[in-house]
Image 1 (cartoon, rainbow, N blue to C red):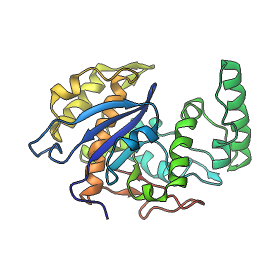
Image 2 (image 1 turned 90 degrees about the vertical axis):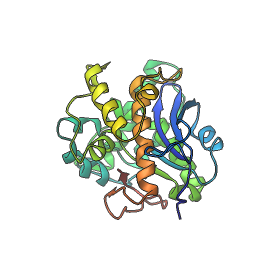
Image 3 (image 1 turned 120 degrees about the vertical axis):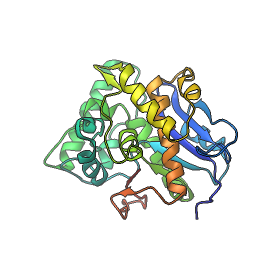
Image 4 (image 1 turned 180 degrees about the vertical axis):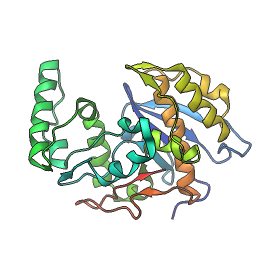
Length: 263
């Protein structure tokens, strides 16, 4: 059972590892108390080690991997895209577990990185119908997906405390099931208007603009920070019983990990 006064943590991957926005009991939006905090951790294990054992975590990273991939990726991805309108391209299709683990090397050259991408795509095509390779964007987060996957395999107790979410799905749900009007980025660069739209929404849910306007910690970008802040609100919705999993109920992957995007 999730405690009603749990520490709530929203997490997003970033260049230096993982950025986490933490709300301790009393700092939950709508309640007076200490300000939330933000920090960057080199690994997800280090983040977990900094938290109490009953902390509830919502993370922008796929959790639960298919053995075979259908059109549109996993069920969660196919279900949430129609909610997002023009923002649906932010939801990557995740290939099979075999493709995720096709090459787990630490890449020291760009040539090795592209070769590994080609190997993963070859395995992905062999384990999907219709055959589909791996996008560069999805391949870029493979190491982080494996990092969480390995922890959830080794520690089944985490499966009831670490939940997958997605920032644009979170913003949509927090916005009365209306997708954000503006993108956060345009051609890879921050879009100030899109960021302002999301900051205003987060403030309507209890954040202070001063907290959101602070520079992100070293190793994280401004959009990573906002995404983590949104994830924390989803952790709160989960503890309050307000969040919805896509699909509902979540299926279980081959190793027993639930597969759903919560928001």
